[in-house]
Length: 490
Image (cartoon, rainbow, N blue to C red; front, top):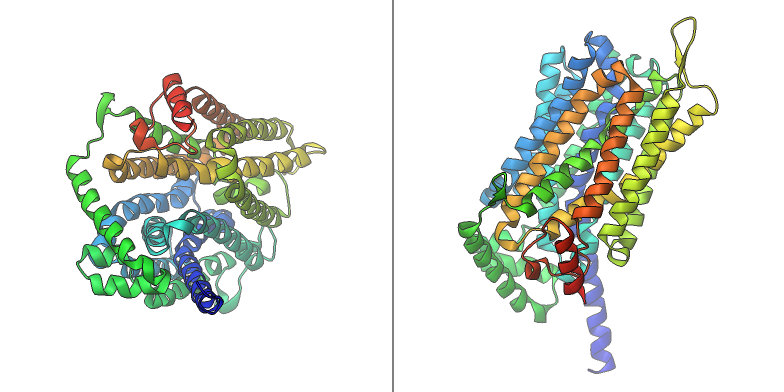
């Protein structure tokens, strides 16, 4: 190829790369809304409980009920996306976020507040499925892993944005700030939800401008439309191969759907399905979402006045360690990172439980952590976030994408995702009454599940880095599976 031709091709390749990255970033905005809407309740929990006079169990249910909407939204999202398209499904998610933000912010009682949170949960569930699906289908395979990780990064940025906006509305006042009246006489906690209108509208506007997924267009037999989209993301000499590959994949998926069966010898399911369920449940049972849903309440309960600032710092830590996970997962491997994460979480949660056991109550009934236990609790909580965010947070989703054979992948992923939402709901619902009973017991319980996660990975989960799991027949339990994976990697 001549030097002139190379110079002519270089700008085209650069333009394609920019376009692909732009589409992935735009698609990942759904992850931002996912993180934002799931964590915005953090700063409002105490004020909502006070305004609506809620006992701990009902307060927990008001927070957790959004997760039931998440499960339903995730279950329906795939069917909706296949019927009306990925970008139109994004619009549905944006509309649900918008309505939920306004409804929750203007709720007159706990009943309608919970209804609007369920609506928001539907939006979260839709976004949790359609955004990564769109990114995977619209970007070339050569950069799919790196750009696909933008979804997890966007979720952590959404969590950070939610906690920061909560803190700003409350004036970083962790005791009464969320109950203060602001513009139009509305309490600060209401504005925490109403501000969600901004990212909801932005997501909807961007979805209107995004091209449809080539895979969806080909599934609807619109090859001309699919080629038009591929010309924006794929080199001209690769378009024919990409179209043929997508069409073969669509036919293979249709065949797999006819043959797919999750039934097996262990309590009616295949071992690999149970492995996915257990990984999903353990990811939630270590209590990570207590940090992102209740951290302001938690730090208030043990006497910290700057609880909002602590929550914001924790969110920043969560964002930072996500970059670490993205950078090293394909170098270090899944199994060593999960084992390290489990060990770190166990140590951190034990430290937090021990610190809370040293809490003292003053003559006026105020609770505080004397030095150095307050610092130990803060360091332990953030070490927990680091250990989870760099390992179990993103890697469980990596494993769920790798571990199932093609013939059952879609159904098995659906079961594992549903188990994760249900586990998340159970932890979120149970935290207020458990914390009311004993914070020491609560965090010791989470530490026990972190230890169980370490034992589960050590004894039952093989390494999947560099292994074609289709050659292994899928992930299986036990020592033989680890040996098979090691042999296949040679």
